[in-house]
Image (cartoon, rainbow, N blue to C red; front, side, top):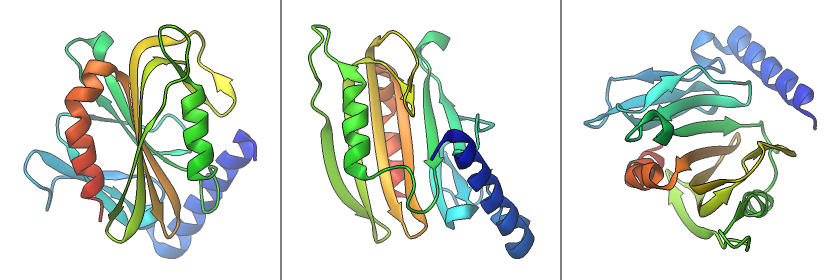
Length: 196
């Protein structure tokens, strides 16, 4: 399925939900401070009927495209050290299998010598849903679909949680400079474990 088809499908889903289920179940995610653990705000994902506790120091941004339910800037020690968190949802049965995505992310990383990087993969359950976490560190050629962002950026980390929801996979990525991702890893995993 090409990107235009993905965008149309996301628009169609959002329109149907807004018309038949009301504006609170539209595609856009919402950040709320009520009923959130200390130091977090609750991110509501109406399309998936889920919420997640997001650290308040992460800065909410408008999603850059229709495949992003939400995105956040994660401050580093300087602007150049900022990382990003993105909530991706491609629709029921879309976005590829867990295994295919792990292989694709692995292909985007290399060591300083140009060798392949072995991902760290773990499995857990959150609110009765299977979750797979994947972590890769090295030189990163980030790509969306089949399009690469250009030359590899050294000393980067990608931390991903794939949540297998009843409505399809929710893919949450934290990526950026190794030091910034490392400093936010526990908060990211706590957020994933807090999905309800």
